[in-house]
Image (cartoon, rainbow, N blue to C red; front, side, top):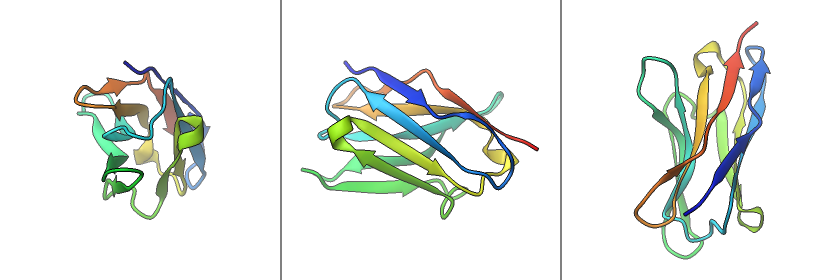
Length: 119
């Protein structure tokens, strides 16, 4: 099992930046997948950015088309933490952002952190 704690959400003006953090309760080095999803009321949860393991410490990265060039996912294995740097934020980025981790087979979710982009 793994616990995930997100932080870094908040209110930001359009064009602004935020950095989300997701701290896991144990080593994330060998996780099959880890990343960020978001959800707005009435819509399905969607992948924002994520790592998938390529074996060893090789990871593939995937971004949603709507955030490419604006968001960057990164990780610090020593801190068991994944980050999401969000730049040039738009009102459409307003959502509850969830961290997701899949050590082996079963996936786990954090409780989410709210990002509101508004003037």
